[in-house]
Image (tube, rainbow, N blue to C red; front, side, top):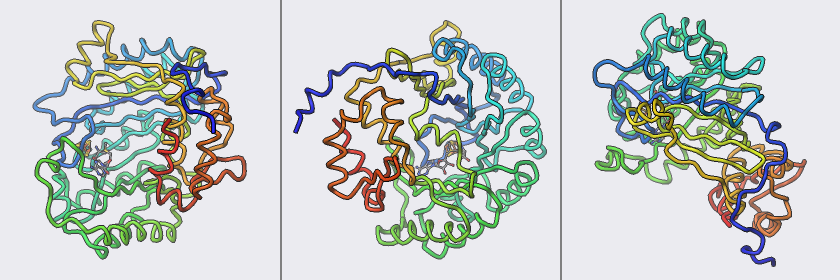
Length: 396
Ligand SMILES: C[S@@+](CC[C@H](N)C(=O)[O-])C[C@H]1O[C@@H](n2cnc3c(N)ncnc32)[C@H](O)[C@@H]1O
Ligand code: SF4
């Protein structure tokens, strides 16, 4: 076997045709009405008024600085995530999108998504968001049970969520509903009820996440009681796949389920090792260049970020990805997809030859974790069950 160290030199490698790598844009909105105790996203409660217009000015100025990396390339998807971007006024969303359009060519049919919290969308705003150019909404419902919503510190009831979903249905034909399971006091029966209400809500996409206790959150400091045990969690995870499958939602990613043709194109681009510019507090971006793959992150504190952008420095740090790190980065995302990715993406998007990871590919196949039939790298069923073992094989 070839020594791992002799195959890699710890340096970036050129991406042969960066302009052929699909490009997305992520925009981060860092504020919420209230910080949920389980959440480790870059979000915080907004005391008093928000500096909405100043923040949008900073986002656009930040974008000006990023254009150098993507000259002449079209953006295929835009994603307004958070935090709770549905707190923005529709006029602000419209100003933001016009600003983006005047700086970057958006591809025809560009998917423009926005996250919304049912407790933070004033009545009548959803239609105005659609008019402003949002083409896909992602609604954080989490649970249809009031006791669980209270334990999760959510700012809405199940009834309010249902009301919002009615308005979402009227305004959007392409939308996602976020659900969580493995919640305090939840059992299989309650999850089945949630799944049937989620399916009945009429979305085109469902994201179903098992609750994780993240470091630094209120739940990590004071863990909730009454969490389901590992056997119950396994039964719950199986129920999610089978109930949603029967309802026509195919699992296409670890937590992603979609009706035919309704996968989230923005997230697909991440998982296929595409490029994404990123603007906003704490946003992370990745661009391919003739020199190599560059990753960068913005200051996570909104005040520090805005101050930095005004002084021409919103980026907190950036780094070229070394050749040794590329295989793991690529496989970490690609193997989350149940259909995997075309094999040729490995060479065209990392700049490495497939030969460079031959020993790792052989090992993954030998252990029954990787299938590469049909010109794709794809986790087998066993590989999906032991996904982190499979991904770790590519840690070089
Ligand atoms: C940034 S939030 C998006 C929407 C909006 N902020 C809201 O909460 O309504 C993304 C989603 O990640 C999921 N999530 C966040 N923290 C989680 C955790 N600790 N465990 C599992 N899922 C989590 C939730 O389903 C949440 O809706
Ligand atoms: S509303 Fe969403 S982003 Fe904000 S704290 Fe809760 S889960 Fe996190």
